[in-house]
Image 1: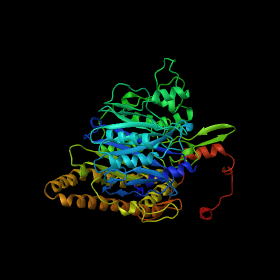
Image 2 (image 1 turned 30 degrees about the vertical axis):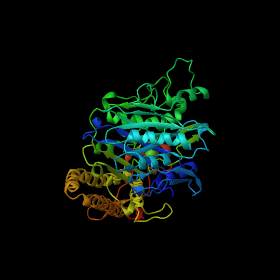
Image 3 (image 1 turned 90 degrees about the horizontal axis):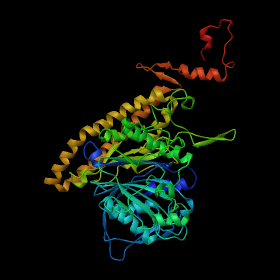
Image 4 (image 1 turned 45 degrees about the vertical axis):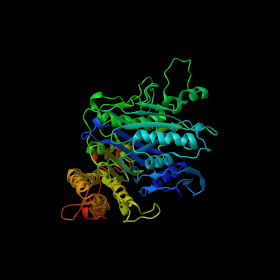
Length: 547
């Protein structure tokens, strides 16, 4: 049986990244039951790369004894086969029918530990775990057993794994060419706490005698010692992250800054210092998990995934680099050289390179088809709209499955959101409030309607179970397409109102809206003589100054 490509967006992301078109970059947040306002376990994921995502649904299926699954590379070449299991579960993109959800971020770590002889990339492991496991702990078992048998092909990877009861972070790296299995460690996030990771290994010290809360490969320490990554005679505690993904000023700026920003917003009372992500000598790394000041709602989690360091010294809407209208986007490359000195833009959670993102809810008190919600957004998290897709549906909205990066299409949800986000760059401070108003209205309505929708679904599951899947599918698909339609209208409104540098008023009349005074002052400071008019000049009628 061919490898079903419900993970095609992840595969494409990886292939684009490996081709050098874009540095791999994702951000993930894990929220435990007692840290959430309603008792949900929540996982977030931003899949950041320059590509057009196609979300997919994989049906549950039965398999015959002896069936196998072909593992292919991006070009369709068969790398090997994995033995199939008797039954595989249905999956809505990255959440399965039992509310198990998996996200990831790539940390790469030590490049010499990539194993080209391994069969399974990280996206294969995610796919297979979602099809074969019901819980987070089972998913870890599936993934680690698979790499032990078939080998691990990717670089360093951090996984967020959540179910209705628990949230786990697992970090894995290969053994190098010709090696066996993988090196890994997994920790359960304590209830009442949150954790996050962003393209840098995060697990430091871990207990060796607490299998309820910590699992690891037998060679996790001995392998590091053998390779010279850790000195057992040093007396220093073993830290997975420093052994397999050593900190550098560059990766601290790039990755730990995002961790800091989530933590500083979720727990402002702790006053987390920026020193570590600015690579100040002696600064303490951020903890793996924290207790938020208040329990987080779904809306709170949406907000945490929207961040350009606003209100801090690193606010990307401020400064000359933000342009006259406070645009937080910075065009790649991330680093550049001036006079032989290397510089780097800030790397925020929200970025124009996001292909899609999600916020998941897994809820133990509801039937699985209703309890699992995959809140999906495409393009930049700051200007997307999260739309609920229940894990009990049987198809994906068409607009989330069509389109290509090579050709614009109003039929593609990604292109519609991408158009609005890109057009807003022209006059960001003006257009952003209009985008956020529509975003807030739509997401607010979804959250208000959620209890009503789910009460009806629970009644159907009790009295008319044969109608439940149809009901959840109809609701999810209809609402998703309505969002895309509303966003098309928003795009057409913006291009009409903000045209040629003018801003149309309520009567549709174009008004001149120039540059902010603070920005004009910087222009004058940079070239004071070029734009200055002579103090005494011949009077020119105003009509002649209008082009």
